[in-house]
Image (tube, rainbow, N blue to C red; front, side, top):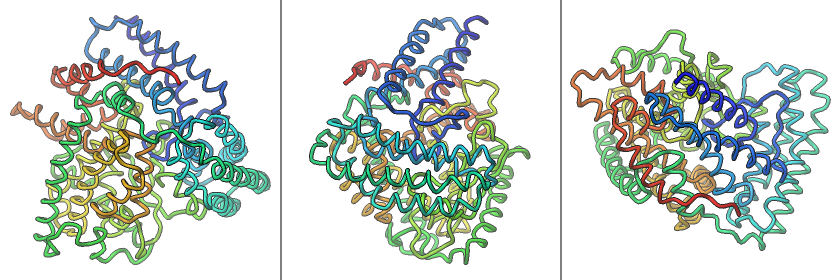
Length: 561
């Protein structure tokens, strides 16, 4: 058995070393990876062929493992590696964003630069050198984009990419101009030329997309098989897509009712959505420094709240989640992704940071709520910061990696309602109303996500529904719709994960000896592990895993285009 565990650990180590070097970049914060020294993105035909070759070898070795007689923990780790291998297959041969989605190459060319910028100052020569290297790679990645997308791209994704590209060159130039004074002198001197070349490549890519749009005829929808493969082989969800929709519709109804009750309780209008964005009726911080001070105090309050209510252990050494002023070199680039730094396994002790602009009348949906009550962000993004810090220190290396959004987002979404029902927002009408509004949003995301994947909605139609039914500002609605169209399964992960957490809690609570704090401590620590595997390990119940496997058996193995 020791030999088997050693073989599995060695295989997992090889996989993750490969994955860190080859996984696509994402505008989302949870999948971010700290790349190896000297890394640069490569989506050439040769690089893609090498990805497939290496993935096939790793998969063959994984399939050769016989863990049927191994302890449950070893079997769980084996299934985890299978999920990670399946995600890689899904990306390369089913979702095929590298062939279908022109916006994918904005993520692969510019998001690597953005990710290096997200860490807090100072900019060492090594870090500044990485920025220059990645900027110089932008023209190469965008040339690869033209080769890979020709005859394969979907027109709705091209339209979305062109919208993002409209002033991308000017925004990049503005950001790098602001960055220069933060860099060592030698690297600052090389920055203008690297920036000019990258900006020119963005303009060339924009012109190519504009001219090629009539030939982009592929469907934007992922299709039912691509969605099912993700749901049941990667996320190990025991519910088919239609069942997820039914659950979400019930939850949306509950959220509408809850918001009406909360608004009446706190003396506001009882009609849900009466405020165009929750929080607008509450005075916000008077300036950026005031907002930062309020958030830092609120984060300490939330930590005490967990401890005093016996909800979640707060180790003294556990790092913090802090708002920080948005640096001038990041402000033009926030369209590239979530503007925070959750750090990495190598920096797990550093405070996680969310960069914020000063309060204003036109803040987007989430930022407006955070300005009114910073605890709305602490209750979700702050949970990601704590959960990742705990998981990165997990004694089992197999449990330290991000596999899929469902458990991570499910825990954070569950925590929002946990904080509401435990009384954290009793003194905050705006905060309480936002939690209910966000519940409506996450339920609606399921419907939007599935409908986009099945081709029942276009991104424009999805954005219109989000703006009207949450309600939320049009810009945030558009960004959400386009992201979910290109990343099926991510939008539904919040609601699906939360319902699985509640189901696990209810099953565990059948034993009168349940300690809620112990349950949450374990849940946070194991927060990267799909919840059907957590259920198997915690309760000895693999029924939901078997259901997921039965659903997966109906999904054909992916064929290559």
